Image 1 (cartoon, rainbow, N blue to C red):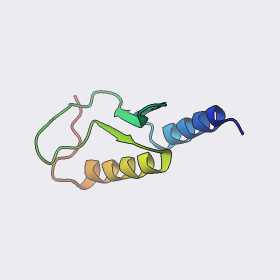
Image 2: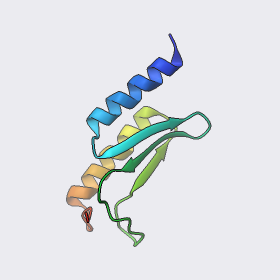
Image 3: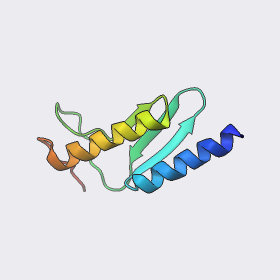
Image 4: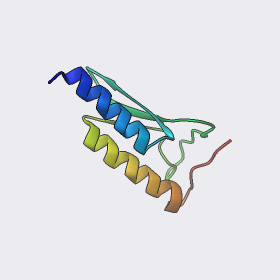
Length: 81
């Protein structure tokens, strides 16, 4: 099976599960996701992440699920412009 086809399928599946995130893969640095829309990037302690990076699709999905929980229940909810 062609790895490129599997990678594209993984990106498509994760993009459907996490529509608020832009997801892509780079061969040398792994899987990445960055928030879409008017998200305000904030660097204070306890703020939600605006980008996450993982070595594979399952790890990225786990990180994005954690971000969903932080957005809804964390001490600093995700701020939008």
